Amino acid sequence: MAGQSDPELSLFSAEELEFIAEDEIVDIVPNLKMGPLNFISGDFGPFIPQIVAQVPLWLAVALKKRGKCSICPPQWMCVEKLTQVLEAERNSQEMSEQLPFHYVEISRLLFDHANDDISDAYMVRSLIEDIRDVRFHKVETDLEAFNGRTIAVKIKNLSAMEVNIVRPFIGRALQAFYKHDSPELIPDPERVPDRRPQVVQNAPRVCLLSLYFSNVHFHYMISPVML
Image: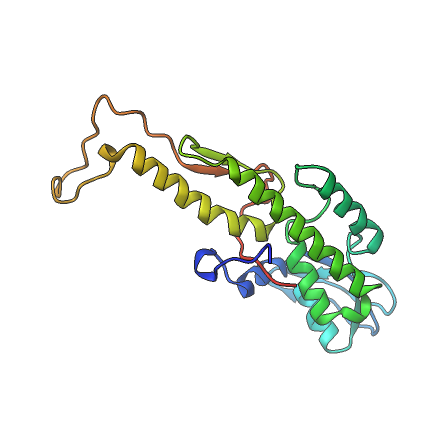
C-alpha cells in the first residue's frame, strides 16, 4: 500500500512519530471540575465541566483513558472537509496545504483512543487513507524525473510521514549520483591517511546535496504510520 516503507530505511519508528505528534494542541470537554495541571511543558487548566479547554494531545489521551473528558476532533477531521481535500489532491499535482503536518499521526491517535468522539468515524478514516495514498502517488510521480543531473530536490507541503519516506531515499540517491559522476573527489584513506584529501583543481565544484522543504514546520524527519 502506498505510504508504507521499510522501517530500516526510515528515520523514526511509528512510536517516535506519534510521540512527536502528541505535542499538538487539541480541544477537550472535561466532565469534572479540576484545578490547573502544572507540567514542564506548561500549565493547563483549570478544568470546568462542559467548558472547552485546550491541552496537548498526550494529556487529552491520558484524561480520556481515565474517563475525565471527551476529545473534540480537529475541524479538518470531518467528512465535508476531508472530501474537499481529497478532491483538491486529485485535481492538482501540487500538495494541498489544508492538512496539518502530523495529520496521519493525530488521526491515528484519535481513532485509537477517542473513536467514539468522532462523527462518521468509518468515513473519516476511509477519506484520510485515500488522501494519504493520493499524496504518496504524487510524490512517486515527482520522483520519476529524478536523474543523475539532479543536485537538490524541493517538495512543497509534505506531511511528516512523507518526509520520512522520501528524504532517506533521495539523500542516498543524490550521494550515489555524485560519487558516480565525480569519483576523484572521494577520499582515499590509503593514499592520504594523515591529511585532508586533495581535490583535483580542474574537478567540478562540490554541490551540497540537500533537500529543501518549503514548509518551515518540516524540522522533523518522520516515519509512516498505518491508520
